[in-house]
Length: 219
Image 1 (tube, one colour):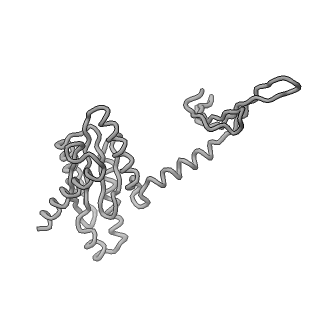
Image 2: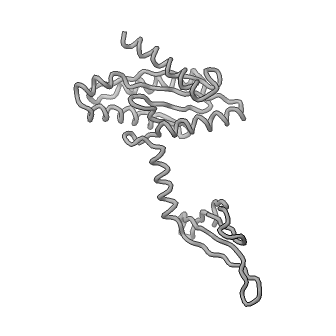
């Protein structure tokens, strides 16, 4: 059974190439590189088709793609994946008129943790936050490590109050983590399009709100 596929540029003037994903009788998914063309055989025009199994190559390409979009420490999405997701959600929101929100979270006092306990413990603290984020979000949400000690959530079809509820719940879960050393997060929320119509504007608004909260906590 053919599940999906797409056309590749022809390798020759008279041939066409397709990459198709099939499901075998055993229920296994396989990728085939199919070439279809014509040739003259004993004075008559003949149709020729070849199929090559390229499943391993496609799997390797997918692994490389995931590595390019993943944070090596936490396994979350990286900044590139976040930007791609916000761009796609912006286009979807333009078509549907439905808003979305971005939450930025900052692990408080990471430098103090690194200085007192070492960078290994600091990295573990980042992974603790990442695990809580990963488990506490919907499948349609995008969870990413924004960079350094910051994380980001993209929440489709979510208003500002709903996003604050999510952020406060996550912040509480981080505080209730019984592991040592104790950690906490600050957060800022921005909604499209009210708080910005470009990726930079949305992230800048959320970042400004985050540091208002962070400065208040420090005081």
